[in-house]
Image (cartoon, rainbow, N blue to C red; front, side, top):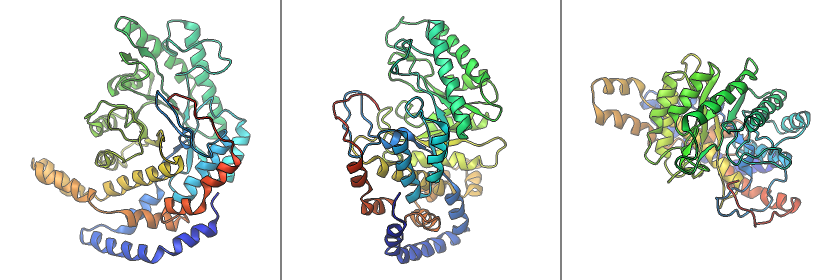
Length: 424
């Protein structure tokens, strides 16, 4: 963890300027009938989960270039996640990936508690073969033609639920790489039927207070077809499985120019929005830092979420899901957590009464201008003040760099070979 005295010292040189900026923004918002302290309170209560795998260096299908001080296992990952939450006060939970993070649950709970962390949704892995695995997923897992392979994949997911139950998790996220790379390679209908049957077995194993999230992905690693390729198929799955099955929306898993905020609105409308994996993309599943390419789209997504607040049964899970190839993963995750909070704060500033009036009058220009008026507000003083009051850093990245945390863990953790390839 970062020395608290260092955080205090870094904050001390920025506090007066922050107070001035916060007061000025408060005056500006008050003229619009908005209480800045109310917005700050909501932003301060908002948290987004960090993926355990996100604190390592990612890669592409062609190469991976490890960074210094990479985590050696889940306990190192939790240390890094603890630093992220300590400096941002925005990431109180960690989402584990099994079997990558498989360890004694009691030890994981003890470690997480020492860092002030909890555990979010569990993530299964049947998109790659593991050491000692009896049957291969080369040609699919939950939709494989061989019943024995499907049974193995189902059993793995049930194990994830068992582990998660001991950690206090309340959800399982299932993403599979099943699909095909050639026309005619598979019977598309039979393949989907096999998938649904396997997912029904997993659904039956859910504890009564758990939710099941299915995640759609347009392509990769299957490039001709994927079993769960879009939100429509994902919705069909959730409807078929039952009331505790929901759709998970990853911002990168869509074709360019897809209207993701409309997908979000549809899933909210019919009670099947389970949650998000936040990232950003330019071409496809780029897994770039959240808000780095299209922050306006992130704002539009949160505009739909804020509009739905208070709706019965509305409780989407929020998690980052990124691949950090050329940045320090801790810095990227801190920045992304703050970008998600930024979009939330901006969405809270939308004048919804005015927007509704313009919409009903079919005033396209003023409807768009109402959204832009909220989006253009620099809400950084709100975010920074929420961090300061929570004991976190006014400037998380600057404080992190001043701590020299990366250099410290680089000296303690063995250097990783740069020869590896793959997406993680």
